[in-house]
Image (cartoon, rainbow, N blue to C red; front, side):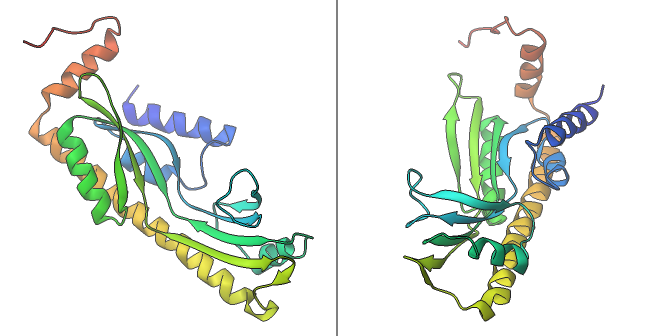
Length: 217
């Protein structure tokens, strides 16, 4: 079974379970390859949060969430509920991945910044210094108070403009993710064309998990 076929099957299973965001496959098929394996990721979302401050996890809670565009009806429906404090939030894409090789990490971080994922970096390095876990966080963010202490912050006739703004921000995140996917695919294609002794060793390690490989001198 080819790696692409195996990846497609995994993504389909995650779609059926509900782990995968809508339309995520088109990005993940390009991001994943011999040097990069995505783990938990989000293509971006729009949420409405109830709470005095949307960033306080202990006291704030999400009352509406979508990974697609929001409608005026959906926003109005949330505002019609008896909540004293409401926030509208748009969060751009967040990608976590296992990356193999220092040069891959270097090129991927450059690609991430070029694509607009300004807040990107290494979260974990294995003991051998060859396998990394990275986070790529886009700079797309929008937070807007809708209601505070029971008082309206926005006018009813402004809902259409608010929806347009939120959807535009979400689309901008998708554009950046599409750009990142294309650049990551080019990074891996370039590394493959150059050859990688490290990935040959990684393939051998996967075939023989108990084999730690030769000790470095």
